[in-house]
Length: 476
Image (tube, rainbow, N blue to C red; front, side, top):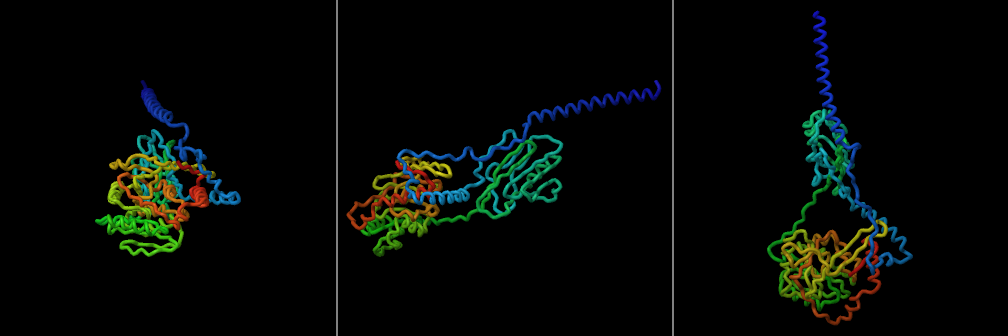
């Protein structure tokens, strides 16, 4: 065979062989790609966010107080308008992007922090745990986007692999998955404005996969600690409010000194004709006459310097069953508790509160349920979690000062403090610590002010309507 023919045949066979190999390689390659495309969703999927359902108007129980009806007709429209404006401001102040409902995507190759990532304002912070796993590509490209802060790469030498650094978005691209994950480990988040308590959402994407995760933005708070000392007098201050009942107040002081000689008693006094109390370890604060029940409570508690205060009425009576130490023991063993009540002459009055926020127009619905409790307190079966207790209770001073007793309530007031503190104060009621009550004596001057008139009740209902944004209130 001529050399040209032999060479041509060899060349032809080589082309056939290499074409077959190439065909097999390409077939294998495209089969893999087709498999990937079948598994991937047909369009880019984003996790749903937002509320599960829109706020709806709540239903008032039968025989509830219609709070809107307590507002005089002539002023009702103007008051409703002001209330709506104030409620919008309240919502803007208390709502947070961190309350957004997020869903984790299934079968996602994206790794990211789902909880606990907190940054300080103005401080660049590495986002922990960012990575891409379980995929094989010729190149890898991911993107991140935020709404409040800026995203950056710690090592600026990698700038050629970055798009959008120092802005609200960041795009990273690498040929190697390992190199991409090294870049992701250097991504930082910074909020460029000072804010003490807010948040942001990060959208993290790769091809058709997207995940959303939260960033909490917090200015760390400074601890405010109380020295418990070694004695009950270092731990607890007794507080009371008096009004034209000095006979009962003096009996209360004598009974307190019988069991606790050195514990300080703070007396808020709004009597019209005050009498000077000169007892040792008694601090008497004279108020303008008739300022009212909650104004006196607020004044008394504002002067407490101990970790706890014990609230008592001025006609109570300390007995051998009034063991303040036992209440302190419960509080110290349960740091999340803010208030723990006892019983008065065997009456362990307590209640729970059912509350629905309702919509932004008509307002919420509230029901106070007497003698309804939740679960028992761990390790203290004689104590139960509730929402409100009787007028004999031990409380954390700092927690109560954050809620405070509204001075607008003068004579119709007790449950209202616990209503204002719902969701802020953890409350328990214990039956193993009690205080006595003095026999009720005749006091004509005091009696004129003891029982509230219809106007006091009406004013309280109006206050619930506006201040608490309620449409109805029910007691049972």
